[in-house]
Amino acid sequence: MPSATIRLTMAQAVVRWLTQQFTQIEGARVPLFAGVFGIFGHGNVTCFSEALETVRDLLPTWRGQNEQSMALAAIGFAKAKRRRQIMIATSSIGPGALNMVTAAGTAHANRLPVLLIAGDTFANRLPDPVLQQVEHFGDPTVTVNDAFKAVTRYWDRITHPAQILSSLPQAVAAMLDPADCGPAFLALPQDIQEVAFDYPEVFFEPRTWTVPRPRPDRQELAEAAALLKTAKKPILIAGGGVRYSLAENVVAEFAVKRGIPIVETIAGKGGLTHYHPAHAGPIGIIGSTSANALAAEADVILAIGTRLQDFTTGSWTAFSPDAKFISINAARFDAVKHRALAVVGDALETVTELDAELGAWRVDPAHMARAKALFKEWDALLDAHQAPTNAPVPTYAQVVHAVNAVAGEKDTLISAAGGLPGEVAKGWRVKAPNTFDLEFGFSCMGYEIAAGWGHAMANSGPGGLGGTPIVMVGDGTYMMMNSDIYSTILSGHKMIVVVCDNGGFAVINRLQQAKGVPGFNNLLVDCRVKDPAAPPHVDFAKHAESMGALARHCESFADFEAALEWAKGTDRTTVVSIASDAYAWVPGDADWDVGVPEVSSRESVQNARKQQEQIRAKQRVGV
Image 1 (cartoon, helix red, strand yellow):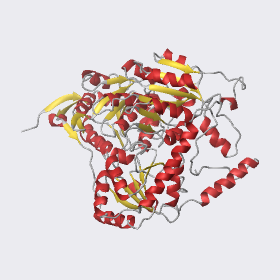
Image 2 (cartoon, helix red, strand yellow):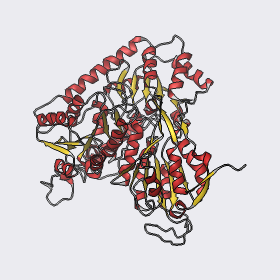
Image 3 (cartoon, rainbow, N blue to C red):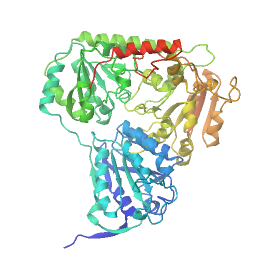
């Protein structure tokens, strides 16, 4: 007897299937897809929006202002949910789709799930070329959507309505797999969206997905335990994978029990509170003096859930050439990096089994005592740099401290590119787990405010923290992407945005000058402008008010502190701006390998080149 079918257009079938996917968060069964960020155009408005409208109460659609920012909001949501729940972003063809490529790269670099669905040109090609279609003379199958292949984990173009039967489950499986996790992309040609097909009813039966926890290989585990037992000065590097595995407590207990100091990557920061007994600070280029000192002395490094990015390793100058690495990672690609003893498996399960394998072994308590002493010195250094002064404008460190002081335990700090990442990675004292989001895997300017919207949604939903997202941005990032301030006004999701106005792209100006190049085209005073002595000033408070937000510009640090207290009690998104120093930075940095001209007429560049060669001489030889 043939199975029952239901006749739907391809677009209707996609949407119906999405509404029947579920996941578990803290024991509660919730929709796997919490909603859709959408901007409609001719490639997705007539068919896909028709399907979404019919399920608007099951799968809410939120209107974005920019395709890139709405996809970034989806990424912020996924990070807040620790990859257990996913948002969708949909656009038309052409520029709308291409606007999402940057967001796809952000999700790909950070191993975060988001489902991107874009319209596409006609599969039958009869009306070609259609509006917004680019044409490749030698390959008519190529559209702008092929650009997503470089920045997605799963990519498909649906050219027959039956193809979604296999493609949709594969997309979800990729997004939820801890090894393959990243963005999935579906291109939906306009003429295929409209086609009706007899889909089997069983395809639309509700399904509850779980995130798999792969166990480690026994031999790899035994070898890791044997190597760790040889260590006299080990450290544990906790990466984002620890947080996504929900393994923070297990890893922290393991570290305390075994006497191993924990240092954090950028993605891993927030797994521990600042004053946790095993916490020794952030490691690497925007890390702490304490963590970097321990890294230089370490004989065995236990890296858990980290891809060992250059900002973590100091471009591989942060460790002794003789140090041994054990890498626990769900992704084989990450686990085998740099000649590490690879243990492929879920962080929570692997650390639990590694602990059992170690028996009674623990490190000499003097090692943890030294780590605590170094961390105490680091904390004092932060205090010194964050203390108020009589300077005409505050430093980033002082601003970060003021925001940190007013933040509630459940409030989440969000930042990304520019000078603030270094200052919040170093100076933000985490009060509660999972309240820190620093996107620095892709260093995507514009992530911050959009992600704040995503965090606000996540915090108000099932399993959410319930706090207020606090977004910290520089003036350069604010100018690049700010329209989701308006989005939050429309949707009623409050966040606090702190704008530090230091007159341009200050941190890249710092790097430029550090490598011997005079300030050029970064700070506004160094740009080609009508009046270099007094470039026009942007009133960020008035700009935010024009989008419906509440806002204040602060002329003094005392005004700023008062404005932060005020912002906590407002009923909508609130923006607070203050001028800040473009030249003062908290120390603690490791070395960084960047390109410096091999030949130059400038003595300053020649000297910088010599310094860079000295840095490269310290690098570990990797594979």
